[in-house]
Length: 354
Ligand code: PEP
Ligand code: MN
Image: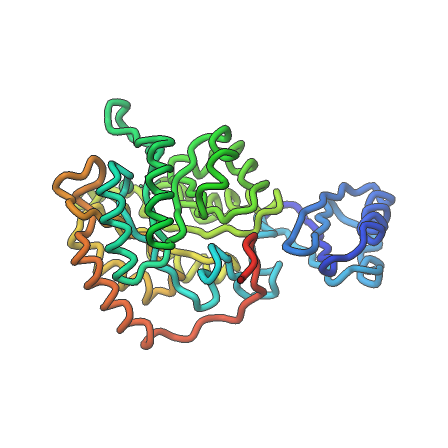
């Protein structure tokens, strides 16, 4: 467990004077206070033990005082009183609290025809977010590294034509600022889950972040990585299980579905699953997608390629457009059989519903 922390939830749109007053009370006791933007309001996080903690409760503008020794007090369910958060991805597209989202598209954007065909097909099949990497973190330096800014331009064209919001990977802090106007979700890849400067920078953006679990990371490390983003004031974080490295060599990774119900019991953040990287094998993607939803996942991210035999990246784990359409059909029949999901905290997100 971490050090004891007190989180003071201020009322939405409370005045600066009320916040300053809370800071003063905290600092008077020799404790350090940290300001954290929280949707339309803010949190004040206090490090250390306050003698007169109870007195905070009655201060003007204070909604709730939460004390915890969690390693991830902002990602943990204490913050929301056990409820789930809903993350708003784009107008009309929300995830969490019973809203399940399927994101689909190729591993990498390869050319105009490929991303256009993929986008039209996944849209037709019922996906609500288009995936596609323009900056690819490849294990081998000579492997296709992605089209870079040209790939982003092609993703934008596909978005304009289909209306699908875009999720794409960001690998460097420098790329965040120029990517932000063009994309809808920043993906942090498994290899960057503990790139702390990148996580800190994404804490300052106004767009959702899809945080993939590192292939060698524990749940606690993953939730602490999410905490880096949250403590910067960006609460629009979606967690993504994508398989961990085990002794098994028949599959690319071992998809750890244990953590879906586990993380949902520990955190208010939505959790999705990537069965493409989790298995590495096309024929396993459909069954593991169904298993992920049955385990309680809030969504899926699936690689789909219109001509996977030509794919420059991850062809062996990419569904064809037809296979994806069949999977979506199966999903639509599975959903009514799943238990109704949990209570939700609040509608949040950077993008107002129109
Ligand atoms: C990807 O989504 O294409 C990707 C590189 O995933 P991961 O970071 O999970 O390996
Ligand atoms: Mn891939």
